[in-house]
Amino acid sequence: MTQKLRLGVVPYMNAKPLIYGLNQYTDSIELSFEVPSLLPAMLNNDQIDVAIIPSIEYFRSGRYAIIPGISISSYGAVESVKIFSKVPIQDIHSVALDKSSLTSCALTRILFREHYHLSPHYTQWNKHYDISNTQVDAVLLIGDNAMKITEGEYITMDLGQAWFEYTRLPFVYAVWVVRKGCHIPGINKLLKTAKEAGIRSVKELAVTESHRLQLTQERCLNYLTNSIRYNLDTEEIEGLWAFYQHAVSLGLAPEGAEIVFNET
Image (cartoon, rainbow, N blue to C red):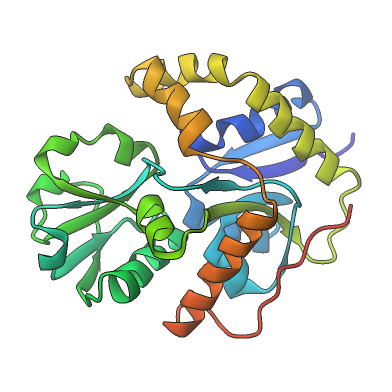
């Protein structure tokens, strides 16, 4: 019996178009759903063969090759990566970070320091508590959780929009990767084809996700077609590299990293 190809995937709405086209391969593909921060360790420990990982972890590890042409990114407002603050942004002194996302935590630190010229105290957000009961000024939330918060109660900062205002570049939150030297024939084409199938079926996905998340179909469709983008072309690569350089300047990533693409 041939061993199944094991793919690690984030459980959020934003990844659904990337995996929609894989549904027809249940006999040969096994999907594991986990928060972004845990997928790199699963890949390193050989629990999975391919993973969508946080872009910051790609640079921190140096062990991976990126599947070309695919990302989870935004060109401006992203909707699902936000700071929810009880005070005006310039008055924030303490921030609780959603530890599910390594990239968003790094981006928060970069934007507060370099864009807003603030140096708040950082802690981790405990998901067992409602954010209204936290003792900090602001909380970073990602993914589906961020989209379900009632914004009227808070001053919000969309990190995708803030990054665009600061750099005029798109932001890449996550990429598909394999371990360097791990030869998986046809994986680039498989994931590219799956992405294309998901984008063609985005209206169907919006209906499914609206029921799952109890959000309107219109909001889900707008999110999947306008807020989130799925390419990794010249501008996205430029934004990815800019993020890395800012991360290095703040000691959030090591120097000497390169962007390496998988060739199979």
